[in-house]
Figure (cartoon, rainbow, N blue to C red):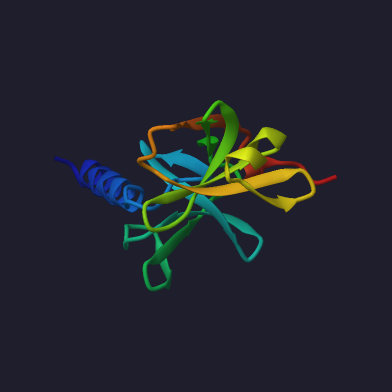
Length: 153
């Protein structure tokens, strides 16, 4: 196995372990570099790839956070991850929470009769056990342009 293949395999393992904790849902912007998915971030006005373990080419930011600046001419597949689903027939957006729960958010007024609490003018929220049989959701990946290539107006 070449050094590059070892590095890619190690990064893949690190990325997978980073995203599979019981209470986390991967959400936000991501990019694929050398076959590995990384969370996107910014640092000092530059776009970066983020990792939770030290990897070749990455710099330690703080404990458990490492970054690599993305060159302006780098080409990568980029996407946004979100979660959509239904709870008792109501369309919901799903966000990670804690203790085995997720936060379901909807603008469907019927949610008020299902234990959802009004938290914004027209949005309802409820913490729901991830194992609740009435909850169905899936990861949604939406392709996005490379944010570091966007032209400023």
